[in-house]
Length: 320
Image (cartoon, rainbow, N blue to C red; front, side, top):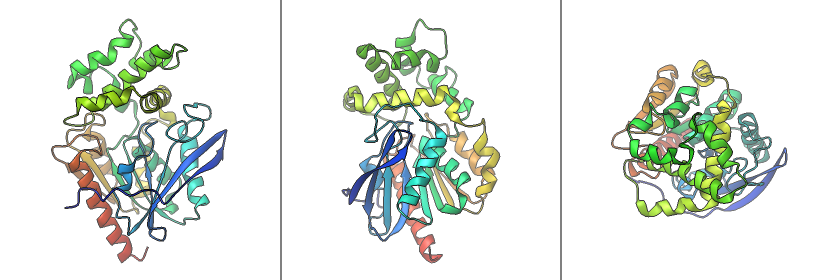
């Protein structure tokens, strides 16, 4: 079975002015005349990645990626102004209109699943299908699972203790306590906080992780956007109504969808995917054994590629 497709370079890149002082980086890959698919990255603040191009057969799919506001190659970097969920959903629709695409396959991972689902609920007629990996419903209980002391912290108490070091003397919630550090004028303090925040999520995102790659998270362009934007969004309850996705998921019952979730996902517990699939009639749930959260895990990547092949076959049979 193909784990991932061969690495390919983008055919073209561009920046789209979406207003509000933001320019969104867009990347085009694969077959320009193929089935259009947009992949929505995680975070908030994660950015696009070459691995996402490798999840789709480049001879079949027209692959579109973009960097959300404030991260990746979008401009201005780290900007929190007009940076909210409604704006990100509007940006996705602006990209579709800009590219003159009628309908597209909407895919994403982690926070990208949140945006994908919210986009589909708002623009259902523009979505031909969905493939989602590592469901994040963005409820308070899901945020508490990741950053509180009664969720993932109980599985990784040693890593959680290190995550708490920068805020050891602060009695507020971790998100509230980290906020001033991530906005500090003291760059050393800011970067240390960003690194500890990012290390926590990285270390629990897969069943095994390489110590050698931890050094990469020291790089400000990698850890600071993720930490700052995640803290910004989660401090504001992701800018969405509590339990909005599950309360409205029935509107998507006509959309073919595959949900992929690692059995041992500690970032987004598998219960989120299970609850979504129970309410979403047209959704096929694939719980991947011996896998966590990261798309870099071979079993997760293989399951995603399997889903993209199956979706392409289905769409071709339907004449899409």
